[in-house]
Length: 201
Ligand SMILES: Nc1nc2c(ncn2[C@@H]2O[C@H](COP(=O)(O)OP(=O)(O)OP(=O)(O)O)[C@@H](O)[C@H]2O)c(=O)[nH]1
Ligand SMILES: [Mg+2]
Image (cartoon, rainbow, N blue to C red; front, side, top):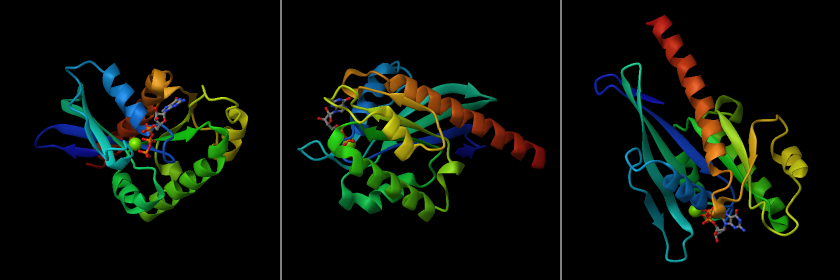
């Protein structure tokens, strides 16, 4: 969270994390379409001609004012391909909320686990743990044949029972619910943090 008391702005950073081709970019594109035009900024996509994310995707959202501050949300995706490790660590810097997107395709069970471990490692490098950061899980691609059962995904990736949502991001299903649940958690933690600051001021 960044508070700028001169400009009276508050911005929070949301990151979509997950293995290559799990649907992070698809989520951001669907979300961008679902927000009203007057609230959303342009979507920036840094990708190759093959449509794999090279650096990240990004768009800003204005959420009106809160306590005299203009509130902005910055949505990012990380590139899932394994060799973009350094980019993922940088994109995670200063993160306020994470959506972990898992791929329900039966052959992506290992890829989900590897990406999850990679996320924990990158948080650790940013001196954070998952427990410090509001997060939700999204079980994407529920439309594929013989999807990994949700109970298996829950057991492998979400043993602590964080909020989770099933999705078919290519149809936009579940995209809004995922985001909205995460933002609620993020703003609850912002409220607590700013209350503590006010008390200590
Ligand atoms: N069947 C199915 N395909 C999906 C779904 N969501 C995304 N896809 C497809 O999966 C492929 C990869 O989606 P992307 O959104 O580019 O994946 P990504 O996670 O951004 O991938 P990287 O940028 O390489 O990490 C595309 O062909 C999407 O159309 C879904 O819910 N169901
Ligand atoms: Mg992508």
